[in-house]
Image (cartoon, rainbow, N blue to C red; front, side):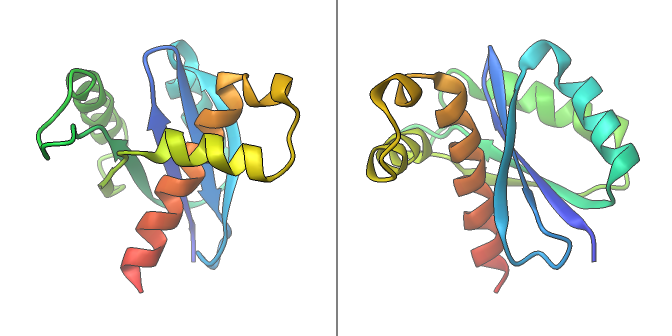
Amino acid sequence: MARILAFDFGLKRVGVAVSDPLQIIANSLETVPTLVIYDFIAKYLKAEEVECFVVGYPYNNYSGENEVAKYVNQFIAKLSSMYPDKPIHKIDERFTSTMAKHTLLLSGVSKKERQKKENTDAIAANLILQTFMASKH
């Protein structure tokens, strides 16, 4: 089997998570500046086999799209054009950042580390991937 690559897209940073090759465990990979995310993905795909992409989709609390959705749609469209053979799955990302902050707090990470947005983004991507993987079973 191949890995699954998941993204928590943001205007400044993109949290990235990846599954193991058996698609059992989700791991936070890193947080990448949005300006270089496509280069990061291309480099990653040269090193690892990836089956599909999972993108956190920013719905608002009324199940409609929020203001960031147009940028996420552009990201999805570019991914689709660059990698037409890779399916792209959208997962509702509501509350993943809040859950990621709570996870950092519970894990005993220092306040200074909890305040780094890139830590929250990577964990949010992990939560998005976990949600997708759980929905497959």
